[in-house]
Length: 91
Image (cartoon, rainbow, N blue to C red):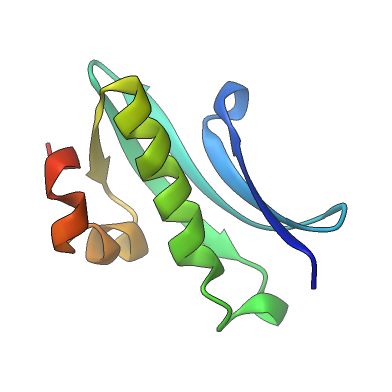
């Protein structure tokens, strides 16, 4: 598996690719000075590989670079963002 996580700013998401095949995404919308994570999904064939976490991490890393906060509405992102390393991004 050649997994590649990409932040696609123009599409408001982070996406995971296995070669040329898209296998997951974490999408967000922009609102004022925050990004609202609405959805995180991984192809069931790739479950258990930590891909969802890497997708949320990629969005979080780019939010920091941009200077915005994150409001996680997606249940997975909401749970992950309760970790101490995300405290600086809380709305």
